[in-house]
Amino acid sequence: MNISFSEHHRHLIESLVDKGRYGSAAEVVREGLRLVEEREQALASLRTEIEKGYNSGEPRDWNPAALKTSLAG
Image (cartoon, rainbow, N blue to C red; front, side, top):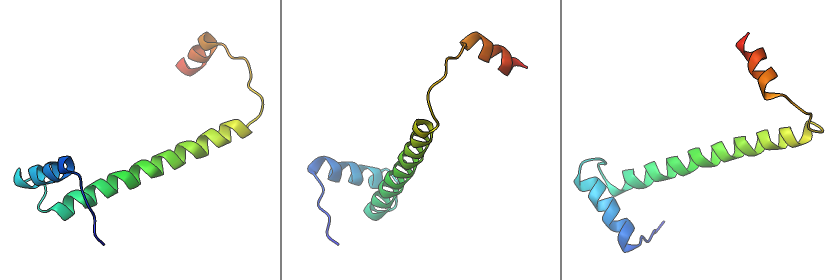
């Protein structure tokens, strides 16, 4: 696979490797992909929870003070 980077990103990768933060450009790319994957998983989880809320029925009135009291024990 061949990947092209903008000048900005090439400098960023080189800087991270030169500073010793990563051992190679490949490590920088792997970390970036890991972060993208983590973000996508978090977004999928949020979408699932939103769908659950949407499907849970009509909204009900609630009283913030009563909720606070009930949570206080």
